[in-house]
Length: 279
Ligand code: IPD
Image 1 (tube, rainbow, N blue to C red):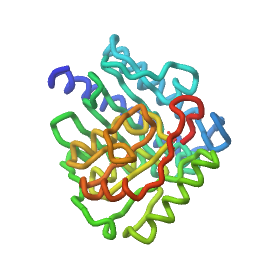
Image 2: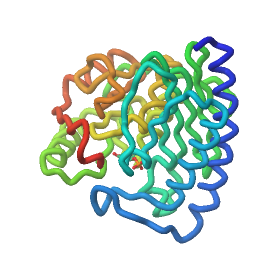
Image 3: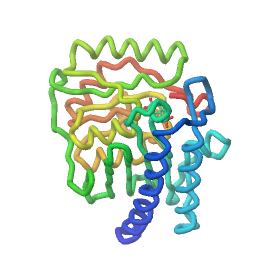
Image 4: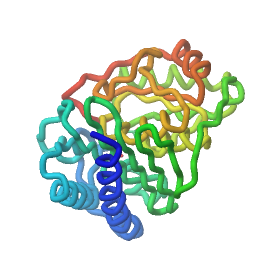
């Protein structure tokens, strides 16, 4: 896809994400209709479904040949496959648990990938009115202002987002707690903001220095990874190797030095590629 095509896709997607944001902004104040997915803490609301429908209908009307990977469509049995074709990767509400509790760390996340690389990414927190955007090779922005990562190299000065996630798999819980124990005395601060996409966007904007998680879907990372890359940061696998969008794990950091040190300290956990999609 050339730059003009990416620009067109981006403009259409930003318009739809703003509409989607309006739905989330209104719904977060109200009583939610909640359903459980893989477990009692893996949730979906009518708003997740409505927003995913709005985005997929709007994008497929504008780009009939494009493919889709959506969190809720996948939960309903759609194939979750990344090919080289232009593919919109959508998390209608990332941070659903926060949304359910009206905690404003929640967002709409839309990534466009093609040729197996990220081309455009939009993360919109409509409650705090923060629109993070990036296009390949064109930098990352927050509400139209250019953003860059913090550049922090020193772990003892780093604010690290370390998600606890939703999965109660005993092996996963053990790994999460081991990593918190390892990192807590070494970092400036540890945070769990409850939305992987908001955490990635925060690192891109220099509002934190690193984020790692094992148990994500591609929809949690597709837009945020591009934001971090375009803001000058590192996005890699949890062991510090190449990032694989479909492998359910991510480590990002403001510098290679920080990424390397955190990767060397982490206990590893690999969720199954399919099956239990809770994180
Ligand atoms: C969740 C959020 C959360 C992460 C979970 C994800 P969802 O996505 O990104 O931060 O810890 O693993 O499942 O379900 O709110 O879209």
